[in-house]
Amino acid sequence: MPTSHPVLSVVVPMYDEEDVLPIFFERMHPLLDGLGISYEVLVVDDGSRDGTATLLREATGTWPQLRLVRLLRNSGHQAALSAGFRRARGDYLVTIDADLQDPPEAIAELLATAREKDVDVVYGVRSDRSSDSWPKRTTARMYYRLMCRLVGMEIPFDAGDFRLVSRRVVDAVNGLPEDGRVFRLVIPWLGFPSAEVKYVRAERAAGVTKYNWSKMFRLAFDSVTAFSAAPLRLATWLGLLGGLLCGLFVVGALVVKLSGNSVPGWTSTVLAVGIIGAIQLLCLGLLGEYVARLFQSSQRRPQFLVGYDSLEDPGHHSYAEAIDGQSPEQR
Ligand code: UDP
Ligand code: MG
Image 1: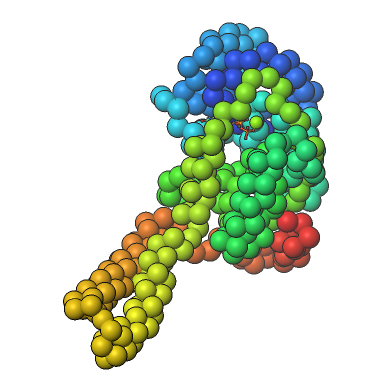
Image 2: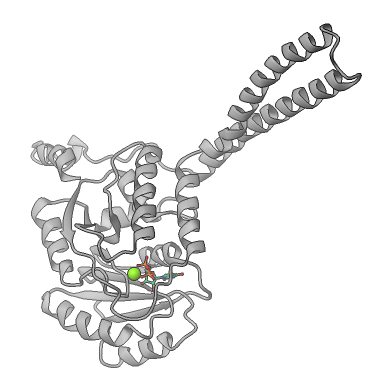
């Protein structure tokens, strides 16, 4: 049986990964044993329909640190990660994909960096994306640009979901009541001291991607709506624009009417349609503003998280460290 509180929890979401599993075990097992710390591998089976569950169950016979959590149905990568965050018991938690695109060998480096620099988050950052297809690279770039703007702060570019976090971060994330969280945004947003480890992302070791276009779209949509009410405000801006155009139209229509060139009924029809359209959009925008507020308050994100309190540190020894840990070059 695994120890009750391992140092490290490795959380692996898996959806229909039977092709890659044998290679996964072969590479992961000796590597984690070699770290010389207590660990658990928490596989979150995201409702796989192929042989994944059977292979996993068989493997528990030879790998006692392997722990299985199965979701009732396919709930998506981020939801599987949420399940892993809730269930993991380690002091540190590493999330890694099952397909070995993120090198498991880098786990040791993530852990060492967290301990040396005394940071709570270590992002695995891809040093190049040549293993991704062109459309994926381009959409990813657009995604990170947009997200940096929406989140309103630096988020590490090209950091996917390969990262290490400390127990403090796990607890903070679990304490967020919001649903549909996107980890790669929520974790930088929390603002814990962080560092980066560069790595080269490999090709998928076996099998095919489980992220189809609809799932990628879902991720992008969740990312935008979780951090921005801009789409809701679209109606307000359209309404204002419509109102402005309508004003110009009124003047135009009156000029046409006064010059006597208008077809009977044209002016009143055009004005009615224009004015009503603008009013409707403005009202929708107004509703949108209230919905946005309700949405934000329903997320109930903490307004702040305290990183240091001198009462807990009478000699002020760790104050400098607490500030250092948050220096921009470490992000
Ligand atoms: N995954 C999951 N549920 C899903 C889709 C994917 O748990 O609905 C897992 C998948 O098994 C893998 C990880 O999420 O471990 C990343 O997926 P994938 O490698 O297919 O994505 P890509 O690297 O192509 O973006
Ligand atoms: Mg992958």
